[in-house]
Image (cartoon, rainbow, N blue to C red; front, side, top):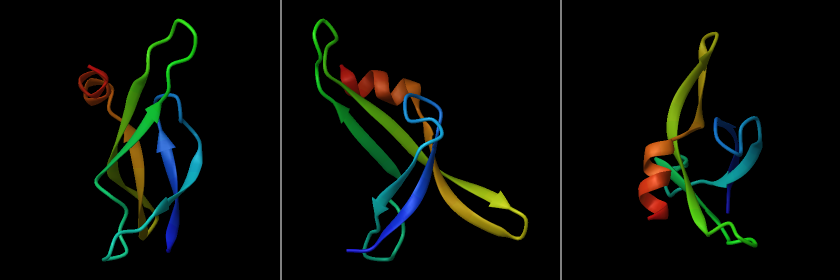
Length: 76
């Protein structure tokens, strides 16, 4: 399975570059959900990142930006 190294902006994954599996048309998914298990007193939650186009010079690439509102809805 092919993957693309994709940058994460904002939220707990800010600045990280992770390999994201590519879809059938070799694109990254529109949303990326990261389940975070419960730890001690902290309840389980889901982090939601939204795909955004980033341009660098004449080239562009996808990156994920943290969506705080969607993360709050997903976590219940």
